[in-house]
Image 1: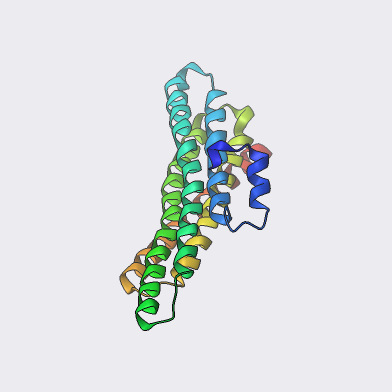
Image 2: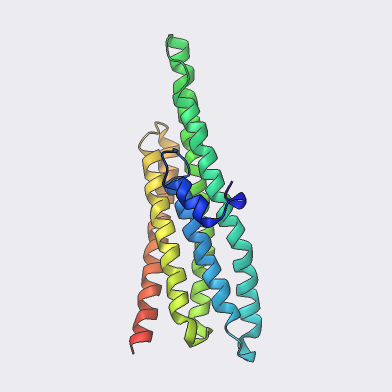
Length: 204
């Protein structure tokens, strides 16, 4: 569980030969960092006219951090379920049929955490867009960093969804996941545009 480990221990575990945590968990950690940067940037904005906006952004970011971190554990658990499905016996026709069904179900489950990550990432992006308009100029680079962390997380979610999509047979589920991929790609592009706008402001 990510809550029970410090960052170094978790990253070292990710670098080990254990199958999980992997890319999906890394995406969740990146998104949590993006939300944390949003919270910090909001709290550094002390202008009275933006006090309510800053409190709202900081409070919502604080809620999104554990939401993102929970997805790291969810991704690892989903991968474990998928691995267990692949390990089922396949000696008889019935076993092969049951194994195939279990793999399909577990694959759909493995796509759930990155799909949820896109939802959380959408909220983080909305907050960074709000901050762009009123944040303390001294932390503009941190808002850009939040956007880039969100972009990296969502781009990783796209790859994770696609690897699961490739294994699915049900047309309706494939179509649903394909729509999620398109939504995630649009989100990643939006975060990249935001970061570019901020960089242009910094260079001006």
